[in-house]
Length: 470
Ligand code: FAD
Ligand code: NAI
Image (tube, rainbow, N blue to C red):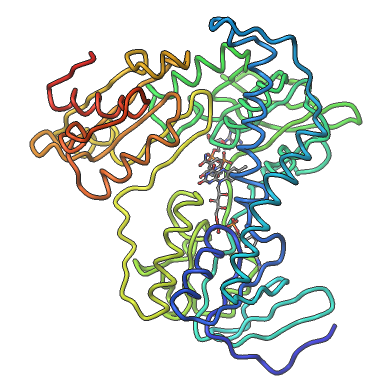
């Protein structure tokens, strides 16, 4: 190995190039920092390479295939003449047209900002120096500031080592074929999104969830809408089921689980284990620094994203909070601004969360239950997509929009959407909640017609006690 003994001095080193790291690097460069970004794997991190983006590509391919196979537009007089799936082409489109376009774009953005991209695995030597190892080479970098954005990886449970037909989310996105039967252990966001995608692509899917409900970040009324659609697609959901062991052969994998005190075994051709993710903080030499961790391995930060070593910052999946790309990017901008000498606090009022199921679920801020638990006096308004003109023209009327607002001031403190376009519609509530807007502010805003967005105006009018369309 060629070891650089002389440490090179840099302003800012960012470790990891996911939606945390690359955004931090670009913003810091815009604010005048000389930046080096270190990446051991692929530019774009989990999100662009093996997370948000490829999963949404498969979900969309699933929608396209399902619509043709099941002739879902016959009600509109549109009949398809059967459909075939060329899985190799689907994978090629996902990898080369979707992922590569985006990761190539990010690499170009980094280069345009004169950010140095250093390939290799970073490890802290102490509070000032990291060692970047790539194959036979190693570079020592002495930094004025550092941002840790090393993300997270899938949790492996005992007796379910990721190998062969037992896969994690990365494996599930890159299966060599559409499984005839896919078993998914863990019905959280990854499990539910990929269950929908593979069911639409023609697989039989069984979800084994340890808790009494799937999609536990969402409330029961929302989950019921997604569960009804899963049932229609033949997705089997077994709740309160604890996965015990797996036995693989060349042909299949047998999964033994326990539900309600009874042990059962199901055989499938693949099994996805998606039981959560853990932060990548254990192999980066933090024990050589004074950076403090929680007992769950998350890096402790203040509201400027500073760790217990004031010139080392941490963002994204390595710190507390939801493991979401947009949360990582928000924290990235906070960290970069502070490093560049600005005084910026992480003061996001609420972080939206979306599950790209059929239909989509989106939530942010308070729910009726959380408001009740906190003793808040709230107004709950719920408007069904069945009463929205655009949803009817789309033949997509399942679901609702719900607003949780302060009873006296009408300030919106939470919103939930389950239905068509929920992932895009939630942004109007993000703007409202972040800026302390009231339901009246939304009802008095002219919304274009006919749109799904009008249902947000309708829900607000309902909250104001002046509904037109219900
Ligand atoms: P990451 O994206 O994990 O990036 C960290 C980077 O650091 C990686 O590239 C890694 O190689 C690199 N790295 C780690 N250690 C080192 C080291 N020692 N040296 C050098 N480099 C290192 N979130 C959403 O908001 N919406 C979604 O739709 C969504 N879908 C998802 C679907 C799946 C299947 C998965 C797995 C996740 C999904 N997520 C989604 C979560 C999202 O991907 C993460 O929250 C997000 O990527 C976190 O960003 P990050 O920058 O913190 O870390
Ligand atoms: P998750 O925390 O969402 O769900 C894990 C599920 O597995 C939980 O329901 C849990 O009860 C269950 N579980 C745990 N151990 C089990 C066992 N032994 N047997 C059966 N069930 C068990 O984690 P997931 O789905 O792995 O996703 C990880 C993270 O990635 C999420 O926290 C999310 O933030 C992020 N993500 C976000 C997406 C989005 O924003 N649309 C999409 C996909 C992932």
